Length: 336
Length: 276
Image (tube, rainbow over all chains, first blue to last red; front, side, top):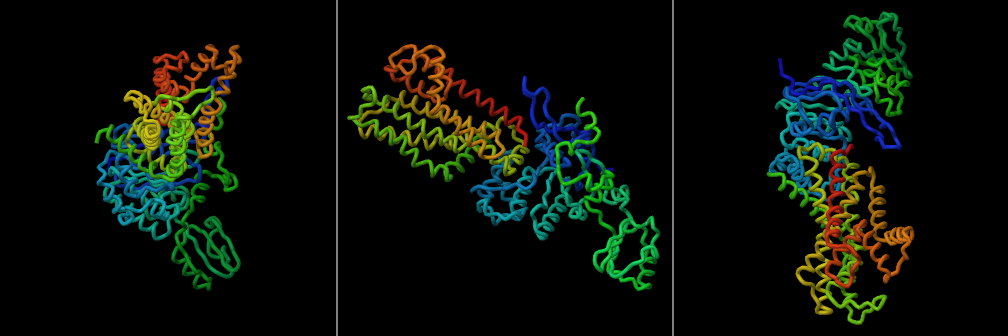
């Protein structure tokens, strides 16, 4: 059995919105954060961290990157307890959407971060080649496209040959070609033994890339495992999405309890059902049902979170308030 | 590579970027006008200042030139450093920087050195031009000690404003707050300090603005220790025996140390506890 490269045990961190001020504010005002978070990840594994805005993904990554110190719990790397300094030595971090600007060239930026990482500045050009930016080495950073900026951020994260790589929303702003080449690069790194954690709210994009996913909601890890395990746990495994045209008598082909969703738009219909066999499909075709596609159902992030939390979309709403990031369990005792 | 060398390399990267930035290009004519320009003006053999004062030594001319330094060099330092931290916080680069395995204390030192050098180098060059202008017009030149005191005073003055601007920048989440704090601090010590001094004098029962009243001179001298501009002037006054404001060399040096160490420690602590 593979030894875990990174282990996180009951990690707890809560942001301070406003600090305590003697004579003015007796208690600090606390916001969201990460609560009781435990998981482990092996060498060469890719973990997808998914969750809605404000779920605590970025805070968790900042804790793992050694930017914030945990208030409770611990993080260990290769079985050894890691303080923030050790984490910063072992882990490469690519924050979300860095807006590189200014007149520095790519080479100068890489060299600056090599100095910060105590690496030889000669590695700068090698890493720029690795992320496909060697031709832009002497270009000022403000001239870069969004995709190139993301590559530069990855190049910086790779300085010091980190054993663990944290990527916060790495696919934001990338076109499909850049996204695919980025994914290939990550697979290549994982094959060389680099452990990767990718945070994203786009579950579909992660499907072909990650070995496991972890779902975060209100600062807690609510599900974690392989895509198949999580789908099974949340009741999505074995679901099929059927699409067709004209009318369909659903009860003629499926038991009522197997139908998860049936929707119609104009002349087209979509059916999400459980236990679809090839016989069912053949029967439908024989009975002249205009079936245009049948594919395994791919749950979206919303589906996964709704299923894991039992909450409706309206309950979750668009608004991200600090208390929405606090788990229900803590909210009850908030005033204590 | 040892830590000291890394700090120096990082500060040189900041210095290089800022020395050739648009900010420097915009401020350079102002520095030239206010520093060598003032020195040229105060070197006029016919000049008579209010109160019938006629500067007749090199240090006196440089002392009056220091008014131009206070108006230009301080605002130059503030303009350079006001977004030293907030700009990177907004762009996300700060998060990347803080995740690197270099301790934050050394990162702070590199930041301070980098911003200080980028402001001090042009100001020091303009000050050298000021000395040349004075020499060309009057034939006067400062002694080595006077020159060292003059350059040291300018160096620490620029450092103090750099530190204050960086502290402001560490609190700001957007540029306008750090600009407001930086320029506000500059305005307080450059323009409003006379008002603060007058109010304290009034509250203490001392006649305000009487240059011949020893009590007023003493009070003003002591209150100036609470302002970076005041300590700067006290340093320059060390070589002007005509000016005696009741502040000893030791008190001036304590002022220099406190104005250097306290903001430095505050900034170091801010960066160590910086949240994103």
